[in-house]
Image (cartoon, rainbow, N blue to C red; front, side):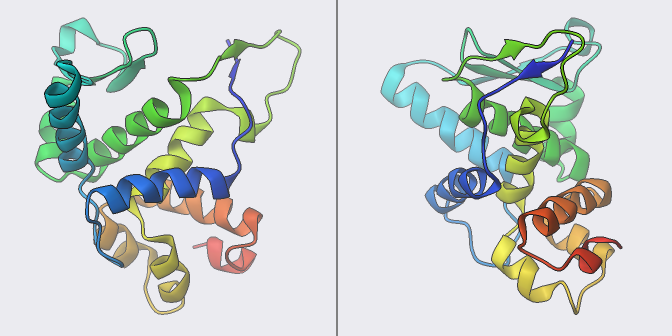
Amino acid sequence: MKVTAPYQSLENIRKRAWMLRLANGAKPGRYFDAMDALEKLDAGMVEEFNRHIWECVQIEDMPDSLGEVSLKERKILLREDCYLSATDGDKEGLFTVAHELGHFFLHTDCRLHRLLPDMELDETRCPEYQADAFACELLIDSDYLIRSIHRMTIDELSDRFRIPVNKLNDHLGRMAKNGDINQQLSLF
């Protein structure tokens, strides 16, 4: 099943991620703790609206997914092992948290549509593509990345921002396609 979301440019996704980075005191060129941001956001929602925006779910209750967003409940669900890995600073766990925050901020106020089987899905309207882009923009200081890409290896950048190498490579491809970096630089 292919699901489509309203078009989101990389610039718009970047702005929305930067708003969350700034609201959480992100420092330029530094690692951003997505788990800390989720917990702060949740604490604010509990204080103001008396409701949680995320929940830790047992593995047996969500065997096929590390995380998801319930659009109806406006709540992020994280599988217990993903939550524990994110709190330990694991790249995959942190990326999953950032990805689900992407769905939360990009998709809870929009209508998602199922495409007919023979229709092609434009990646800029793909909710998973958008949530991945949001996660990368949230975890990575793009300005720093653009300035540092010539002098740091992909592994060094991955370690600095605690993002999986494959997700960083995907995002470098998005940035090259967007004209943010040279196409050759995105091919590590």
